[in-house]
Length: 314
Ligand code: GLN
Image (cartoon, helix red, strand yellow):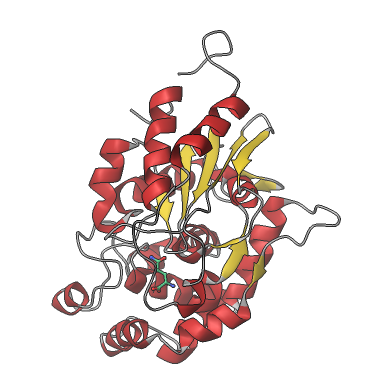
């Protein structure tokens, strides 16, 4: 573990991470189903660390808002678990790695409409449906939750929903609608498939900076305690972290655990949220993706940061 005596200050480490990992040439891909993200320059790279002692360190493009996409699934899960009846939710979605791509249809049919975990798209649709039972505007509620956790900063815009991006994704959502209709057919969706997918793409279209995201995820590093008290219990925080470790990077969860050794959650906007229990929450963002839909430069940067600091759950 990095100590004050034997390591450079974290701010300098992050500056160096940006120098090493900001892409210098174009590699990787962009999500085909979200036209709105296709104009992002390849060399965007930001990183932020929010610590349990209340400090925030950042470097690179850490103050540029990016599309959080599937990172939202961590927050909807936490909110759905605290919205009541977690046992009912866990009877509708499992906690096993899928080993398939995040938007795969095959497994859902073979396994009779019970998604493998809450972080693949089918599982997230079930979580959104559960959350809509309590909050019909679930995406709006997720935005409120994130804004609260980030804390009000006067003169700053804060998290917001990019409604244009949400509409553009919704008009390219055949696959998510197919998943939702499968779930409905198997009796695992209470609300209309279209309403759940519309809510889901709005939650995915929330825009946040790395600094804001690191602050918002901090409750998972401090036993469920967020900016204004408990968000989830200590055991729930542990369990959400466990599901992130085993399922947060889809069919690259094993590789990410091997390289980084931390619970993480990615999004096809290029962001990754990683948790160091008892220490800090990290957010890294760089838009180009590997073949599994995870940020290429972001994953490399987290592996490097974990090696340099000793931050790991192992
Ligand atoms: N909105 C994206 C989708 O449903 C989210 C996927 C992701 O970030 N992995 O395809």
